Length: 449
Image (cartoon, rainbow, N blue to C red; front, side, top):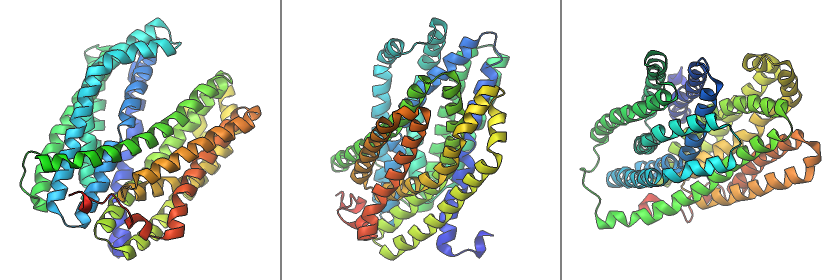
């Protein structure tokens, strides 16, 4: 089927489809963790994994700029056919990942007291969360380096290797979960240990694939970073700083929804959690096209090909809109049944159904922010992304504050405004200046030396 498509359509789908398939396996691990720990004798084990896992996820998500910046810079080097720059992107990002991992390991004893200060969880849940966190944090070097490897492979337009690595990580994690918890009786520590071993195993396989890719691309010979190459780290840190600010605002929005929703009662917070779970499923799927946008945009920018960029805009918009329409239709037709799959509590089902129209609308409102994020990452326009996110975050706060008398509907309205504003503020410069905006004053890989 792909062979019948236009070459540029095929180029996008060859990256997007494997990433969508592998991304959709990510929620499976969370479900297995919940099922395995949920069958232990006390509820606090499940609460501990949920709290500790959320904390680790937050830390690693905030450092997701490692993958994003690596993809954008590598894709530009790939488009410019600069094998030395492709090599340096991997080495520089790998060094940053190791430095950040060392910082996490050094400072992690300070994290748990902060959690205890703000959390109202029971002492048993906090104890189990501490066990999980203290084991899982040791996966930081592997987890952060894996982000770099995924970004580097995507930048080189290879989506098969990231798909294999993600599937390996998820399947090994699930198998070790079952072995350590049900077989060895390690409980919460077993869940954390499974993730640590899976991360390091994935890294080992990833490094083998790097060696193969290195040979296939005929990259410049490996050498330790020299002083001239280290000067490029300042630009990389600036790029990562702006993407970090963007990611922080994004996480704060969902943290605010969780905490503010909790103030409206147990049924509301549970219903929001159910609907957000489905929204995350949408994000995992749309991320596949966002990854394709990163790689293809970066290549076009590196090759200074404006016509290619214009074609990519149309292709990405068409596929993204189609996927968003399918999700909205799916939620409209099967929303109550989907809600029933996740909860048997009648009150929560009814409450979630009341807010279901927001979920139906959100794929169509959010798709543009995902696609444009990918385009801007590929062009390494991190400052524009940061400024867009800050404006959108301000819009979220103003929207909620203005309509907070509407209760939980105000939260969902604010989230809808937030997603729509992200798309508008990213689209406006492109509408005014066209593809040339992504070329102008670009932190291009070709300009680094």
